Length: 197
Image (cartoon, rainbow, N blue to C red; front, side, top):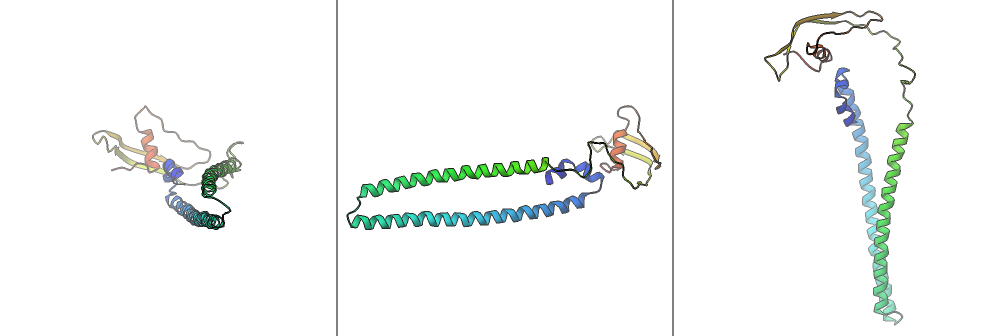
């Protein structure tokens, strides 16, 4: 959410949508924080259970082995070899669990990608755009606009330009002029990416 907002900050600013993007980020951030907290709790409980079972089983094995040794049914070599085999099996099972965890995360990521691919957008852009039903009314007027870029205070880009665009149905207005005459600057100022000093 934050990455999309930052990468499209000009669009967000053009539509004065900062507060809505902040609210969306707060909601998404709360959800992510809740999921992260839940995951941390589950990992902690899982680690605790695994450690109890691991060391508990080792204690039980050593206790049973000591009883068998005292009764003369087993020797020290058999106990040592059994413990070494058990440790090797535990290490391999631990590696296998990590592999299964990575595979599960890959499946989770691909599931999200497939879900995004299958989303049907509300606005159908494949068959052409649809004009809004309600007409937007408004005029644009600029009076005696002067502008200097902060990096070049001695060079005046706009020298007292005045412009008025009235809203009329089915009308397209274009700014024409030579390169560097201030067309993009005027549009940026209308969209409030720049402001006059």
